[in-house]
Each structure stands twice: as structure tokens, then as C-alpha cells.
Length: 345
Ligand code: DAH
View (cartoon, rainbow, N blue to C red):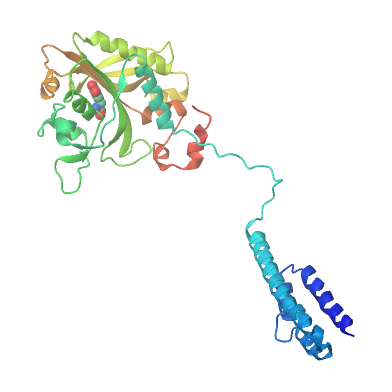
């Protein structure tokens, strides 16, 4: 009789040890069966009266062990179902799926053109100078020979900072000329790429922000011929080895004499007629010999030194090179536009 009861306890123990719970419901069923108020272990205690006195102690120990084992197994199963529960929520991936397309970025057309220009000039010894976009009117205008009452100030509609009559968003990269010349003496041979701002109505052809590259070469005996040769070299590197240029007289307050440089674009297509207004020539930049007054303003001796300077817009060249018809595309950062330049280095 006693052996039979001991056998029952042993059978229940092995049942408990091999019990499984695949989910929370089965775990709860296990708890009710072995740990709940009406659990299957309890009735075994009633069997105590059928056990001979000398084995009662042993039987009690067996039952307590059984309760302990049930609790342990419950804890194990609980931990296991919680883990697999979490896993099934988060690890829902198909490891055999082919990888998605890598999203490679594209360089912006303005950067492409700017980098080309920088490369062309650094090859002949110009170094890159970058400076602030928020300027004061001395560097932007006064130093560049454009005093307050000078009519040339009307050429550029300026964004002044709120509550300021002296701090402004630079209207041209020529301000960097003043920044450089006031801090070092010739020889100076720099280009200054950067963003500039003008209070202009936004349209397909003009924007209130755009980019320029400024150039400045100041040393002893720098001549107009040096400038012409440098700009011819630039035009041929940029637009092809056969490119022709012409210099037309112009006016800028900071250069004397001043010129505008055109490159010959040609008249092969109807578009060429439209772009060049029927002349075949495209205006690319302003340039000239640095006005001696500008050198003086920046504490450089005009008796000893001379120089040339030039400044060109980037957007118009980018638009010509990449057939962009609306300048606003350049600033909207629509990925459908930007991605088109993915294959261009
Ligand atoms: N700063 C002029 C502009 O914004 C461009 C320019 C013309 C720059 C002649 C120069 C220069 O350095 O010599 O239109």
C-alpha cells in the first residue's frame, strides 16, 4: 500500500519535471494543476494516515520536495515563455531575403561645379579661403571701394540683420578679398567659394541665395595680361581645350579697369540661341585689376603691389552644364532632383 503511494509521488514528480508550456495559457494550466488552491499535490498529504509511522517522515519530505520541484519548474517555464514571447514580437526577419538596394548619396550640382572650379585653380597655386556669410558693411562694401553714398550700393539689394545697419548677409564673395588682404601681405593667391545673398524676387532665373567663387591674385608686377592668361586657362579647363574667351569693358567699384568675361558657347542648336541671346557668347564672370584704393583700404602698398580679381556665379554655370531650367530646383533639395546627379563625381 505505502509503496503504491510512494510510486504516485514519484510519477507526479517526473510528470512535473517533463512538463512543457508552449504559451502563457499552458503555463497558467500548469500553475493551476500544481500550485493552485486545488492543486494535485494537496490530496497526497491526506495519504499520510495510510503511511506507517516509521516512514511518515520520509513521506513528508517527499511531498515537500514535490512542492519545491513544482515551483521550480513553474519558474523555469515562465522564464522560457516570456523569452520566446518577446522574441516572436521583435525577431520577425527573413534571413534568406536578398538585401535591399543600397542608398548611395548624390553630390549636389552646385558642389560638383564648385569642386571643379576649385580643382582648376588649386592646380596653378591658388589656395582656398572660406569666410563668414554674416559680414559687416566695411568688408562687404566700404573696403571694396563702395562707400555708403556710392551708387553701386544700389546694384545689390542687401539683407541687413534685424536691428542692424552694419551687419548683413554678404552680397558677394568679394568681402573675402578684404578679409584676406587685411590679415596678410602679398603675395596673395586665393579663391573664395561660398554662398551669397541678395534681396531678389525668386523666379526660375534668380534666387535670393546663390554661390560664387571669388579669385584674388596680388603680388609685384601683376598685369592685365596675367589675368587674361589665367582666365583663359580656367575657361579651357572648364569648358574644353578649344574654348574661346573675350573680355568686354565693364564697371565694378573694386577693379580698375574692369571687364566681363564671356566664353564662346556656339550657336548649334535653338537652345544655344536662347541661352546666348543669339550671340553665341556666354557671360561667365566679372574681373579686373584690383583698384589701388582697395589695396590702400586693406593696408597694402599700391606702389609696390598690383593684382587682379574675379568673381563668378556657380548656379548659372551648373544650370548650363546640367541643363537645369529652373534655379529653384537647386535649393529645394527634392531627392528626385538630387538623385539625377548620382553618377556624376
Ligand atoms: N562681386 C561681383 C558681383 O558680385 C563680381 C566680381 C566682379 C568680383 C569683378 C570680382 C571682380 O572680384 O573683380 O557681381
